[in-house]
Image (cartoon, rainbow, N blue to C red):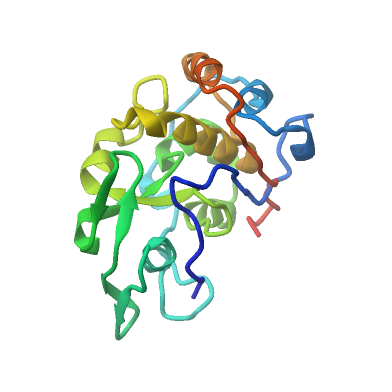
Length: 221
């Protein structure tokens, strides 16, 4: 089981374990959102062949009886969560940074893939092995590749990128853009033109928003 770590909105720097991404820019050279946006490879997107089942998720990778959803709930609870038999999280306190709401019942939370599975497929994951897609869908090593947010905001976002959806809480948008870019850089994913344009606009308004990441290995570890 992962320990309770600071994965909340207040954390400015992002840590992302790396893929051997197809970008010439090294992670150590990228420290701001603007630099990260410029490092994203540009490519057209294609959803041909996408099925959500191509990304096996909410697995128990470390065999501790807690699946990925429960691991995120435990890690992000701001108080010691109540965990019942079989690693069922039944209470805690969670801050949904997309909309600034605090919840105490996990039933109102979704675990959001920062870059949605369909968007990842469109941006390069269609060429990955099943093992790599599973690693992506259960990425607990990065700070906010997965994040607990209100079900309402997660379902409003669906599979949209920042050109068509941003968090309703305006103060969250710079953090969200940094989380999005860090996730794409970590996993070697591309961006299309509208997405890159939206991220560029955000970077201009976000000043020196910090960003840091590590490239993921072939199996995501």
